[in-house]
Each structure stands twice: as structure tokens, then as C-alpha cells.
Amino acid sequence: MRIRNAFFELNIPPLKAPTMGNSGLPALIPYSTITQEDVLLILTQKMYELGDNQSDIHIPDDANKIYRKEDVMAYRGLKEILSIKYVKEEHDCDDFAAKLFGDFAGLVWTTLHSLNYFIAEDKTLYFIEPQTGILSRSLEGWQGNDFRLWVGR
Image 1 (cartoon, helix red, strand yellow):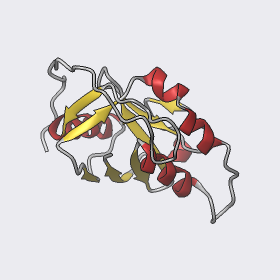
Image 2: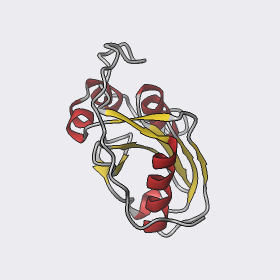
Image 3: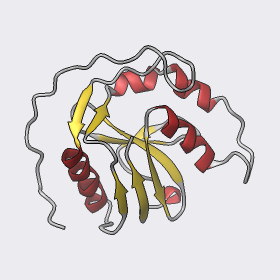
């Protein structure tokens, strides 16, 4: 797969969104959408940046929601998920990540961890650590960097 070095510019108009999310809380309002091709480009560039070029990527929709970083950080549904107690093997990383995936975020599995991601309005990919709510543009060693699966939302 050939990876381009730079994104091309898009004129992204804001969207209107529904008022309730899957969690029953007010929905996180998307900023806009980008194409499936753009999402694939962003994910493959992130994998290349982190030294991995072999992973399954599943982006089911032609139009994919993007969000403002500050809206994600302020989202009440994220705060509610963070309040859930960790229980080893019963409610651990994959369970936290599944809740965010069901609400708004994409899902990513490494060989060590399950976490989430979203793409911001400036086309920056942010990882969301589902057990702490911390956003980052890269992964820490304990999270792994050998990607197994990406699933779009």
C-alpha cells in the first residue's frame, strides 16, 4: 500500500446531529464528515508513523463523522464511562472501549490493549484511553503499537 505524505485540503462544512446518543445522554455533535478514503489515509499514515503497516482496517460507512477535540473532552458520556469501576477480566479495557465505540468513537486493538480513536476537524487522529479519558496522538509502550484491528464508527 502506498502512503501519501500529506493530506489534501478539504472544505468541511459543519453538520447538525441528533440530540440523544446511545447512552441516553445528549449526543456528541459531530463537526462534519469525511470520506471513507480519507479515513483510510489517516489510519494508514498513523500506522506508518508508529512503525506498523500490517493491520485489518474496517471502515463501514462512506461518510464518517469527525469531532472537535474540545467537544469530545467535554462530552458527558465520556465522563460517565470513566466512572465505571474496573473489574479484571469482567470489565476491563475491551469493555470500556466497547462502550465508547457504541457511543461515538472508533475501536482499535493492538496486541496488548483495546482502546478508541476519533478524528478531529483538522484531520488529526486522537487515541482515547477508555479507562482514563486521556487523549493522545501516539501510544505508550504498555498500550502496544502492533495494531491488529481498526473499526470505524
